[in-house]
Amino acid sequence: QVQLVESGGGLVRPGGSLRLSCATSGNKFPFYAMSWYRQAPGKQRELVATATSAGYTSLVDPVKGRFSISRDNTNNTMYLQMNNLKPEDTAVYYCSAAEIERGRPVAHWGQGTQVTVSS
Image (tube, rainbow, N blue to C red; front, side, top):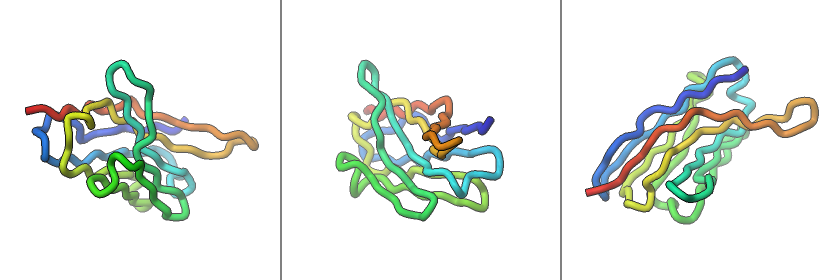
């Protein structure tokens, strides 16, 4: 069973930066579609960014121009660089590794890391 471990969260003032990491076990990392999600209190979990196995990346509109996603297939790690953070970015951030198993989509999840943006 693949394990995903997020790190890098914390408390930061508005306008500050954080870099989240997601370390993944096993040897299938290059083949996963990797994503960051976040869940704010009282809200549903939402997609933030995706980096496919082919190297394509995408960001949702609220974070475009502020966040960037990257992956290091050599070290089995995905990153989320977050700049110009806003209070509305406060959430638990989760990483996800998606693959096709026996013809069905499967998503593996980390335990999450808290990001709090507050003055």
